[in-house]
Length: 138
Image (cartoon, rainbow, N blue to C red; front, side, top):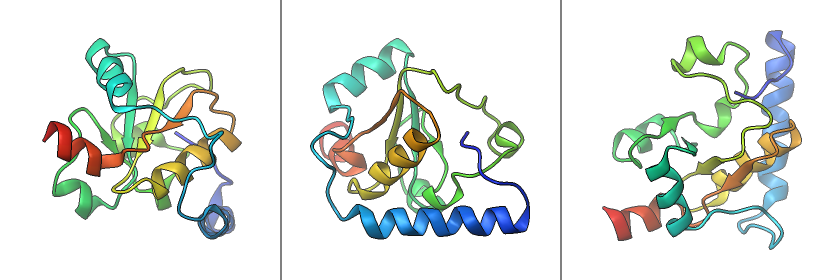
């Protein structure tokens, strides 16, 4: 989905950039960060217009996730061979509704920021995260 530099050195550089974003990001989304609410997410999912990415660890996602989600841990937002790794079509830069979520909101925000910095204009964070989904939908 998101392109990073190739090769071992490129992967190390990408992981370092993600770590820096994590440390700089704090715990809360800036008020200007694009988000999607639960009612809007429900509508987008029901209409098939959204692509939803669970950026939690594989173990967290295996314990439960939002139906129709593709699990890509935030630490793996680098693959050049997206389709081969995830058996899903790589989103286009201009796709309108790319929603990222995690357990509490921080990693979803981080993933949205990484996607935005790479040119994905429709990247948004589901700020309510899996916690809200489970509470209201689960």
